[in-house]
Every structure is written in C-alpha cells, then in structure tokens.
Amino acid sequence: MPKVTYIEANGAKHDVTVDSGSNCRDAAVDNDIPGIDGDCGGVCACATCHVYVDPAWLGKTGKAAPGEMEAELLQFAPDFRDNSRLACQIKMTDALDGLVLHVPEGQH
Image (tube, rainbow, N blue to C red; front, side, top):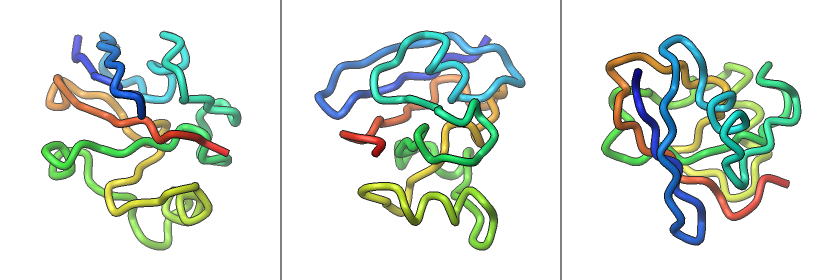
C-alpha cells in the first residue's frame, strides 16, 4: 500500500498508509490529520481539504485543471498557490507511494 506524508503548517509530520484507489482526503480524515476537514465528504464541493503538493510530486499528481470544478473551488481557498490541490481529487496509486502533502495554516 502506498504511503502519504502530511506536513502541518507547524512542521508536524504524519505518515499514513493509503489503499490504492482511495483519495488523500479520505486518508487524512480517517487518520485524524489536523487541518483537513473535508466537510463535503469528498465530492469536490467545499475546498476544506485544500493541500499543497510538494513540488517534487507535482509531475505525478498534476495540477488542478483550469476550468474544472477543483480549480474553481481553489480560487476561493485562503492562500491559494500554484501547487494547491484538493486532497479529495488526488487518487492514490502505487506510483504515488511517498507522496508529500503540506496542509495550509487554515481551511476557512
């Protein structure tokens, strides 16, 4: 099973094993990662699972596609960056084993 490292804004790290095929929002919520709320249940409707993909991983996760719902929601997220993604839209695969996601200071 692939592993994801979530890094809080204060630097605290959380390593989580994730089932292939699930998404990074569910993994965060199921493992009580601070700062990932996922209020909409993972249906790309709220942006409370906003994360920053570590630059080393952007080539594998890709960026939010302009014009798609994810990109539209992220425009309203506090401190939007070029590497911002919604964790609910990052589906885990074996190719993402070792993925590093940074959690913003706040989601609201």
